[in-house]
Image 1: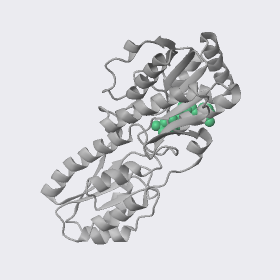
Image 2 (image 1 turned 90 degrees about the vertical axis):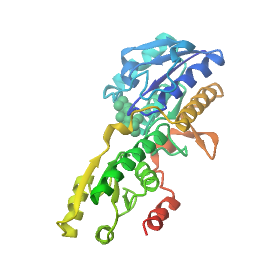
Image 3 (image 1 turned 135 degrees about the vertical axis):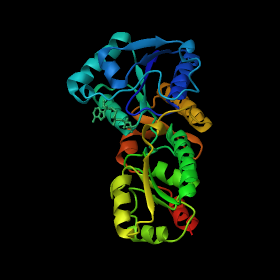
Length: 321
Ligand code: ATP
């Protein structure tokens, strides 16, 4: 293998740049030519691909977002779109791919790999932490810390006015950001898609006098978003003296400088992806489990819902007493 290409796809996450940098420099270190594909599968279809040098990835390790930009591509979901993408790779002589993204990106990579057989290794780039085959995904730690910082600030105003805050965090249908920011931020309740929350218990707790009350709601909770849940609680509590507020953190959770953990994880997964390609690994993701680099087939990464840790669920009950 002499030429490989790297791209970022789906939702961006802090630490993707550290991962790109590691892929480019590991590739060059190993004697490869490394190409960068702009805007994920969209750029692969359009041939928006450039040769990268070591200096192409200078001064990016500390930046959020992705220098290769990211996109969602409908055309790549069609056989014609994927054929165009493959032809562009063949024209440039690219023999291996590193795909940085989430489960959608790996679904696309799996289909592409099965169709054309081009060796492909993924790196788990998503803030949601919902990828099987790695303890943590690149961007998760930064997103949790951003949410935590916001919760700390909200607590100040909640305490000053005895307000009850419902704080909605990202994570799609996974509750990892909610549970870790909730535990770290001392939330009274954390509502996650993985478990059912007893609203009567929430109401009972909120009736007790407290300096402030913060309820963290994962965006994918089955009862609805934070606004809907706030209304449900308000109707049940029947107390006009209580002041309810909703804050949806939104895209600030995606941005910002990556934490040290995300930079190191991105670098490590990137190195693992290139070394994996050279060692004949393909159709799999380079992740870190129990502090070891491991390769997990795409089919396992995308086919399973990673569970929340039972200790984290226990802590929610214990710490609010
Ligand atoms: P995040 O979890 O952060 O949203 P993601 O990688 O899951 O990131 P998606 O938008 O779901 O983001 O997927 C990224 C891209 O992968 C899609 O825009 C599409 O081009 C490609 N893709 C997803 N599913 C398929 C599929 N079944 N076949 C081909 N390509 C796909």
